[in-house]
Image 1 (cartoon, rainbow, N blue to C red):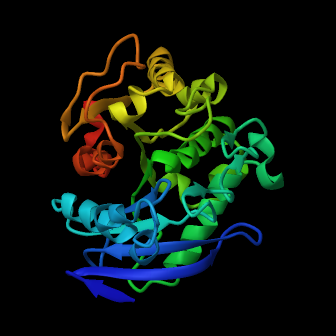
Image 2: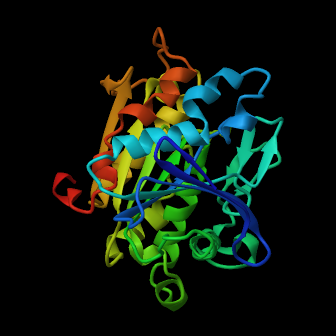
Length: 312
């Protein structure tokens, strides 16, 4: 355990989830009694500072975008909330010390793209990602003094971490009315918001949630979490038009089924008007920094406030 600039840091190695699966988890807090817990799934490259800074090509990004730096940024930005507990779940596998794989939550193809085709049987069980997250958090909380499972929870995915968000919302739509999902799990009933930040991966489908069947079923969810969707031109105006396509498909699907959501697009820290018809036009000055900068400007106060339902 360490304290850095009034931020409590606890590194939890090999926290047990469902079955024999394990993930490392990093805990950060700015107070003892939490008003809200944030669960964060980060993107490619991101890791604890000592590892990320040693990357041969992108080590310089660690100063601002390592786990510790992002945790301090988000806790500082949530200052109006008196006490936040932040849990960063590390990917269970890495390729080339760069590409993150959340194998315990999502199935990936041999090429490294998320595969949601067998979602009802990932790991041999329904809603496997929620089961794993539930077990992880119960066991992680038991290892941190002052932590609690009984607080409102916001889940945020950034970049590759959004592949987990897609899995979670698909499972929520498909299985929310199963007795085991309702009665056996503790986390789902405490989640009040789900946030996508500049979702992306190296596949060409499901860059954002586009599977109509589970999204349509969310209309019947008794207490649907608030949905927040934020993006930058790094993902939407690139040589990867499928990201722009899936982003708009996601928003249209939510509108079609009248699901409450809030969406915005940002560039260089301010609102940016996303093109309405063609996301393939490159913009000058769009770099990987523009991608990470969404962490500095997305409206975190909305995403972690249980009182923001009136904006949706």
